[in-house]
Length: 264
Ligand code: IPE
Ligand code: IPE
Ligand code: MG
Image 1: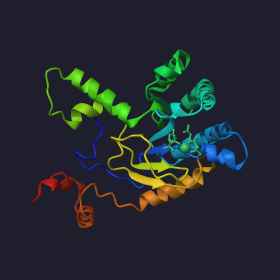
Image 2 (image 1 turned 135 degrees about the vertical axis):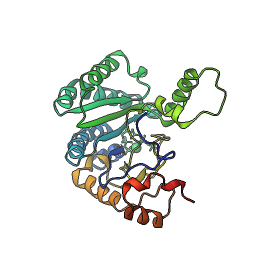
Image 3 (image 1 turned 60 degrees about the vertical axis):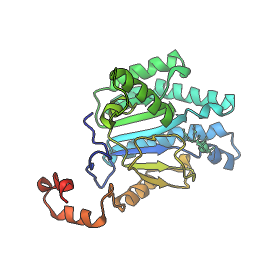
Image 4 (image 1 turned 90 degrees about the horizontal axis):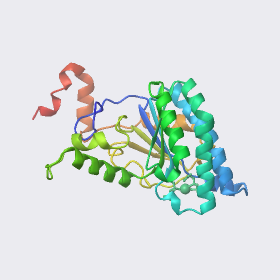
C-alpha cells in the first residue's frame, strides 16, 4: 500500500489531521438526561454525524472514520440493536445520494453479513457510486472490531503467501486490513467521557493522538471538533524520536532528512 506505516517510517504531519477517527459515544446518556428512550439519543446522534462530516470537509480533513456499531454491541437489548439497524438502513437509503453530491467517498468496514442482504446491497451500491470521489473519505465502522480485522487480515495474508511459515512483515499484513485504503489516523476522538478504545482500530492507532472529551456525541458540534483540532495541533508527534531531534529536523531542509535515521 502507498500509505506510510508509522512503525516502519516517519509519516508526514500537518496542522490539521489528515485522518480523524471517532468513537461516537454517549447517545444513551444524552437521551437519559432528557428522560427520553436511549434510541432518541441515537437518532440525535445522526445529526452530529452530518454536522461533523460537513465540518471535516471545511477543515480539509481527508478521511473521517466513525465507529457506529461495534462487534460487541450485539450484546445490547434486541430492540435497541433493531433500532440501530433501522437507523443504519435509513441512512443508507436517504443519505447516499447526498454523500455523492458532496464529493464524498463512502466506505463501510466490518463484518457486514449479519446486517442482511438489503443493507449489504445498499453498501455495495453506495461504495461503487462514490468510489471516485476524493473530497472526503467517510468510513463507517459497522459490526467492526479491531480483533476481527486483525484475524481476517492474518487469514488473508497466510493464504496470500502459501508455504511461508512465520516471519511475516507489516507490509504483508497491512494490505489485508479493512482500511487498507487510508493512512493511519492522526487524531482519535472519543466522546462520552470513557477513556478506552473498545476494540476499535487496534492496529492503526499505534501512533495516533488520543483525545477524550466528556461531551456526549449528540452535543458534539463543529466548535467541539475545533477544540480537539487545537489540542491536536499542540501535540508533538515524535514517533519514537526526541524533542531535540524534531527541532533539528525543522532546521534541516527536507531533502536532507531522508537518510537522517541512518546517522549514528
Ligand atoms: C454510542 O452511544 C452509540 C453506539 C454504541 C451505537 P451509546 O449508546 O453507547 O451511549 P451511552 O454510552 O450508553 O451513553
Ligand atoms: C463503542 O461504544 C462503540 C461505538 C461507539 C460504536 P460502546 O458504548 O459500545 O463502548 P463500551 O461498551 O462502553 O466500551
Ligand atoms: Mg456507550
